[in-house]
Each structure stands twice: as C-alpha cells, then as structure tokens.
Image (cartoon, rainbow, N blue to C red; front, side, top):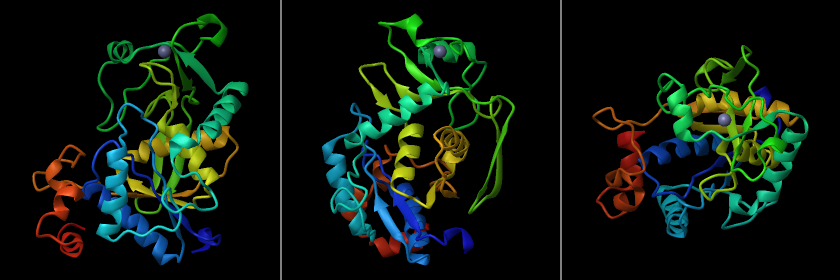
Length: 282
Ligand SMILES: [Zn+2]
C-alpha cells in the first residue's frame, strides 16, 4: 500500500495500571499482525505517567505476559532502540517542550475547573467512554491571572470545524469540534499530579518514535480527532490510524482491567494456551 512506503512502524502502548487482559491482547494482536504484514517494526512503549496508579509489579507482569501470549517487539524499555527511552516517565522533557510550544502559540489556556465543576455545568455525559464536553468556563483565562492556583492546561478546539480522517478499519470518520468533543486537557496540575495528559504524551511519542500507523481500540476514535488537532498545532505529521472493535464478554459487557478472570496472569495458570485463547476469542 502506498501510504506505507516508508518502513512500517507500529506500537503496543500499555499502561501499567493493572494486569493486561484479553481485551488488550486482542487489540495488541491486531497491531502485531499489521506490523508483520508490512514487514515492519513493532515498538513497546510503557505508558507509565499516572504515578498514582502505575505500579512496578504491573510493568513486570506486562513484560512476562506479552511474550507468553506470543508478542514480540523490536524496540522497548526492556531492549532499547533508536528512540529510547521507551518509558513515558523518562520522557518528560519532550512533553514539556511540546506544552511550551502550544502555550507560546496560544493554543492552550489554564483551566481551574474541578471535575465536579464541569459535571455540574453540563447536562449529561456525551458518549460512552468519552468525557463530557467542556463548557468553556476558563477560555478567557490568562496564566498571569491565576498565579499560585492549581490549574490544568486545556486545548482550545476550533468550534464548528469538522476533523476527518480515514480509519484503516472503519473508513471515513468525522467529528465536529465543539460538538462531538470539546476543549481537552493536555497537562494536568492537580491532585498532586503535574503530568502531561494522555492526548499530548501520545502525540509527542508517536511522532518522536516515527510511528507510521497507530492500531488501538475503537474507544479512542474521538481521541484521534483531538490528537489530529494537536499534530496540526505542533506542526507534526500524523500517522495512519487503525481502530479495532472493542472486545466484549459473553454478556456484552466491555472487558475492563478489573475483570481478573480474563487477565493474562490468571489465564497463564489455567488450562488455556495462548493459541486456544486466540482461536476462541479473536
Ligand atoms: Zn476551566
């Protein structure tokens, strides 16, 4: 395919906030199959920015569970590579540089709203898996007005603009800024945290690691629209996207990390083999 004329580079980007489960494995399997099909490189990136929830034991489990299931990557925290480090917690300087760029060019503003403030200001949560649309309370804020107060940096979306992309799996996707999603946090400075938000870290790393295609769960389709705005604001070239249907159990419920029964740790001690699991569920 012509848009992968460059060497294909895909990634697995787990967050060590719990044990990996079959839902992750299925999405990652697609990512690995895509990289294999293009004779490309697969990168393992450890998304360990949430210091309150990420635990070293989950990183060790990840590094055991993934090879057991049949995953193999060429670059990662355990084996290095040309774009090291592969732990997000060691890449703060890159995120700060990007934040400074966004700030200097006026794309972001300081927001002092608490989660409760936002929930009270909006009628109902928008779609499943997604955050409520930010009501714009702090859009006029300037950093100088709020010294000594905790705030987050929020990206001002271009209201009314349609963000489109062609997903490798779902085809044409269109989301209207300000309607399907609102101003979103790119850096969080509250609750003892001072960390880049997922959207910013993901964009900065996928660009820096020269990822050519992002394969991930369909719950992130709207986030892709947000991230495309970040790519544009940061003057970076976005990768291609391939979103996978979400994995649901027999009852139709989406598998979450707290479902211990489907964690790879538990399955490793059961009679199931990775091969039987793949045949049964993928
Ligand atoms: Zn606010």
